[in-house]
Image (cartoon, rainbow, N blue to C red; front, side, top):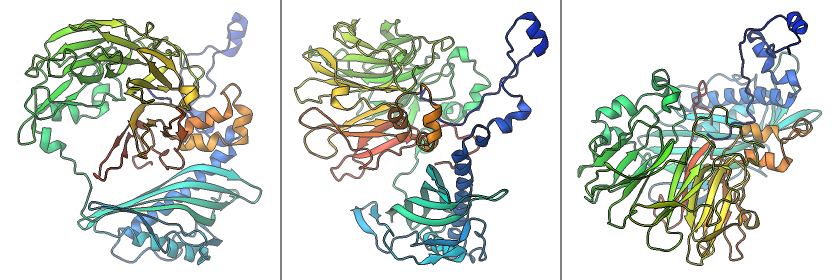
Length: 599
């Protein structure tokens, strides 16, 4: 589970409480709840505990939501736009701006599938004033989203700075439109100045500057088309299991069976039966069978889970296909709490024979493999998260920005014949090995011919273990890649083609965290939260580190504009447009509850 922090969350506990006087007479402590349910609204009001900047953020973001709604209505309407003054409650009459769309866009990339262009109205003369000017400027933006389908637009406010006469905010704008003729996406950063609100009134926009603007056009329609239904939709398990929402299982499967609302198992791909076609393996939550879908020549997939003997009901966190006995077919390693299973492939895609059980890894998560000792067979590295499978009674990460009370990762050395030995301590990998690890990836970082290991950890520092002839040394600090954050994924590539491998780490971007940790009140109130820069770093988002010949990585995250990956569960370098340069694909999201369009 990734770090959930710096969100204004209040848990209400309802308990049976004796009267305070009776408790005093008995000598017992008063365990009355801090507030009653009827006082909930006051408890979550940021003004109640002095967070005036958060109150202003809520008001300003509500105003920006109205702007987004107007933009969607105008861009998606074939009739005239709403009458003049529709946004009078958002804009001050003293408003001024150079506009929201650059007069000229500079091409950044152009290919057969899509094109990207950037620009900025910055430096242009002020051409829009007052509420009418604001609507005209916004109308020019709406024209960029015109199409035959309703567009989408939304803001995410992530920075606020207050002054005596007003306050300023930074907010992401994302808008998109798609139709038969193609699609367009707009990404921008609005730097806005607001009036300070008076009683019973909202803040009003005084000025908007566009700090960043980017357009992506795909003239041939969507870049990707969802073919899941056509590929696996004929299988009953697709309809009865995979399409069901989390609530369907939360109400039917007990936690003791290992079901969890956050499904981070991922997908494993391999040709399990040797027919030259890739097949799909989906590890599942406890109480639900894992699924193996075997591909047919026509591009469809048949459910072979039971026939392949992989339909375990125990909770599985990851599946790794890798040839462990050098017989040419992929075996399956299954991270199945509370053990790791090694299943031998019979050469036809069957995995009935369990060849090894590592039962002393109670909270295993992701899996990776490499021949770290160059003995000719692949070894397995298992990431652990907590110290026990049963999360009850297990200490929370402490301190949350630099935790060292997590689970113990394990290196299983392959001694041949499906014999595996825990070699973690023997090779030096037990150093800094009590962190909340979620992902690991092997790569020859220093170019000496052996596989080094990077481990992404939740709640704090990551590890970079340099392989020195089969023994490992954690050099993350010296190499500049500890990346104190909420590490959830690792991917390697030479993205800048300088001959040295670079690493991208998926973390979490928190708009609330970016606002709160830069406020003076947070610095006064944070107490033992940790060094301020570390806590602020936790909110920044994903990280891109460029390798160099001296072994020290350079943090290129902000310059490359790759930090805002939202709640990033996974990320990977991939050349998606076949131009020879590595792109980044980030899988993100969470249970959105009542905010399905939240950025």
